[in-house]
Image (cartoon, rainbow, N blue to C red; front, side, top):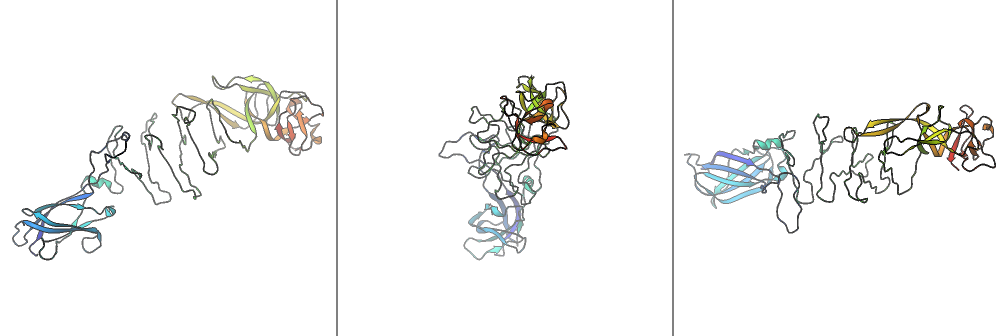
Length: 446
């Protein structure tokens, strides 16, 4: 078979496509947003070649057996995939065309070389055509190489790239094998101050998850999702009933449904809505129960002062709840005693970080110092207060477990055997400190 040679390589075209299969026995919902291909493109290479007589250059005609195989190198190397044999291939004027099966597991960016062997149908032995032919991509297939950029302009609901999986797997999968890498990175590069786009948008047609994050439970830092930003996470519930109208729904298989921690010392959780917080289970606080109050007197209040109700102050925002106004207790018979000052607070109106431009909210932050008339403070109405001011004449007689009542100038003293209802602040929880003139008290108003 020395009279056969490859005269010309007319073309190799690799076609890769993602498509949506149509049909099926079950009912289907509407397709997702985006362009939908009309048909599925087979994973094959369309190859055209030409056989000529090496002595005369005359194109050959007739029937020939052809064998196609892919290899890792131009010479030698390893065969990739199985043989693709075409028996009784019709050759007309030297030309033939054959769709070749592609070894998909090896189409991953590596070099591929096509080796062709030929013989007259049923006659003689196989002759290997030399050289092997390098499989090269078409111009647009180059955009799939590592590090490539695909750029264009498509309006909603279309997409630059669309991948659809009609089974239970992923439509698009990104993977990183580096400890600090990311499988998928989404980025919105708009510099507009009023942009409301995002890096990633996930949607589901019915039940399911728009975006779902998973991590192995055995990892020391195993987070299903990790979010940073001016607002780490913004959630908006569009449910129409009390059963499905949550902005966030958290379920723990073992321990905590939500774990919130503020590294700056501000709020671990901040809930400015009018509905407050609903807790179905027990409430376990590591700090005493605190209430925001206003200094309703004409004198400065300090942390450790025992205070009584002075009245009701105006709400922080229009339509909000009124605040409690307090003042120093007046003596042992002051039945309006309500708690102990523990912290000065700063209250200011701010623009809502996760709202529309112009929407305002009230921000409350702890600050150092005393509380002037009209100023804001946190008072403990239930729980342990480490330092409560004590009347000097009563300090030496106090013991752990003693009941204490208000004294003059916002201090406490040991309760009398007979006391009016509403005058007991709580119980002494520790020894008197002569340096600060205070004693720890567990507040249990009676």
